Image (cartoon, rainbow, N blue to C red):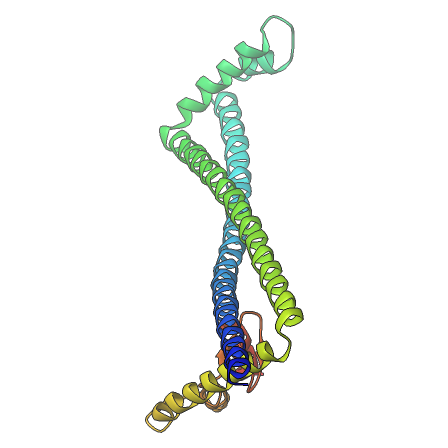
Length: 255
């Protein structure tokens, strides 16, 4: 009887140690998944910011190009008016009349010379616009490369998160089949212990927190957030009294 009892006790102790080790691993996987989820959220926000920057750059390039087109047209018109008013109407008419005596390249060169005679300020301004467009296009290319790299990082982190989740679910399912209630009891015990400790720590700070809210609505949101001190963190969660992640708590507090 003594031997049997001892063997039974050893078996139970072995099972409990095994359960404890499994729950340790499950908690490690969950913590790693939460951290990965936060990094995924940060990268997603970075991707949105880059896309907004690209849109702004494209609009700026478009506006610069419109301004340049208007400036070029005005410069050519100024050159025409200058030569007409300067007594060179016949010369300009022959150039623009397409008589075939001059090539298009020569016509462009003639008008370019005329434009240059209008004043250096116009051409300087036009060159400044061209430089701005060139710089913005280079910036756009850098932004597109950053976006591509960010998209790759997002895909990688999402795949890693999926693998962790699959590993977690597989280990837990197998452990439930092997150990049954021992696993759920240990998980529940740890959860209750962690929640009690978190609430105890939270109570120490609640009384001392005095936040001056900028508006009544902000005051309500702050009180709501403080009421959830001690609630466990879980990525993607938005359950009062159960679990929250950062964005979930913010949305709930301001609802």
